[in-house]
Image (tube, rainbow, N blue to C red; front, side, top):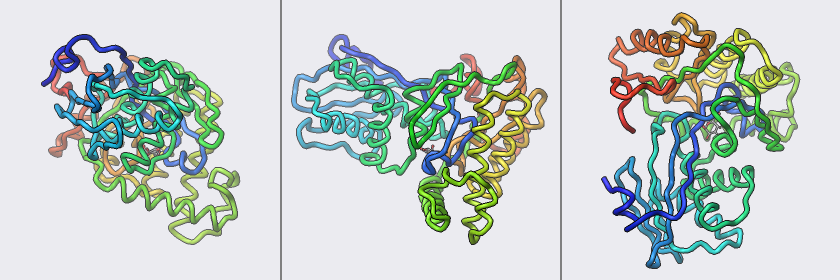
Length: 366
Ligand code: GLA
């Protein structure tokens, strides 16, 4: 593995970092102009940056142990971590900022591919590092919007705005209420007396991209049929009953999920928040059909663990991670209990939050 001193031939000129996100409520609502409640992960992606002395951008990822080089004028990076960074550079240039050739050193403690949005963390960290190095002004919402465009236009992932808003504006102690239409946002305290557990199912999200696009298209069709701009505009759940299947169930998930977020954002007890998480998972499983048996089994194991108030899949689904709300002080024990059941069937689940302490089996470097 490269080290920063060798890579930079001295000290870097700027640093920045950004977290991933765990979404607690409001899944598959962002591209329906709806509402969501993510928190930041304690794990972060860090970028060190310096001007390059040639005419190339040089990128290095410590996680992938990979180098990418491309011409600062007119070059492009191959698909992979380089395309996210290229997107950030090109979109900042498009705002009128002159970006010199750069050396970019990336490290992360975020698990890649577990659904905690390591890609949004990479984009937001890169944009912050460029802002620090070059001194241009860019507020945190605009920064999230550029990060989302980098993902859509350069990494070719047709995502909503949640992950980049979360990476840009969330902290670990509060949830961030986001309105995806207006981008209005504010912090909401985590339910009192509770803490979070995040457990990876160990199943890669293979179907996620194709099914994600299919769900987006179904939602667009449902809103066309209902005569609204987006499903966020349907406030009476009864309105979806006229739709043909599967649009009826898809729209029902989105409309009820928005209502769950709006209720939780007003401030509810930890017990009620847990109920809303359970209802969200059931809706994602039965109506939105983005769960898989392994996620259902892990969610069931978490719910059965002492102190757990509610559990659900988090992120797009089809693999990746689950999140549970637990009484304060019981999270690690509850996560270990759930995993001892889930992993019996030969599965490779692992605890992501609370972050395992060094030397424990679950703390493999990512
Ligand atoms: C992925 C996308 C987000 C959001 C979630 C589902 O994480 O990147 O924009 O749509 O799925 O809630």
